[in-house]
Image (tube, rainbow, N blue to C red; front, top):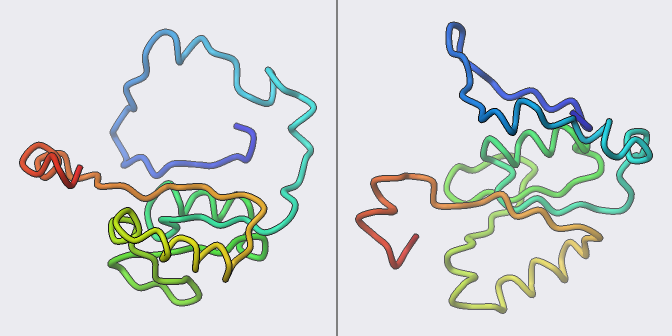
Length: 123
């Protein structure tokens, strides 16, 4: 992997990957010129309190990132509710003006499958 992000896989569990994914070369092989690049500027990670956002924070380094959380408060991160921002764009504008990022990674989402099925408007 380009940033050596390791996903927590419980002991005894083998991840399911398609044949295409297994055969695909990693990004460092496909784009070797990117392998030694360090991130520049300030990176805003929306949803940094979650699994994917947390892995990105770790990969980029906390000193390069500003993270957000929604429901689970994390010290050092900014509260930002993506659902509320969908209905009030000023919330997103305020976040951009506060952080002034050079890159934004949106890792937040409604990941509860049963909830997505029962609440399609929210999903």
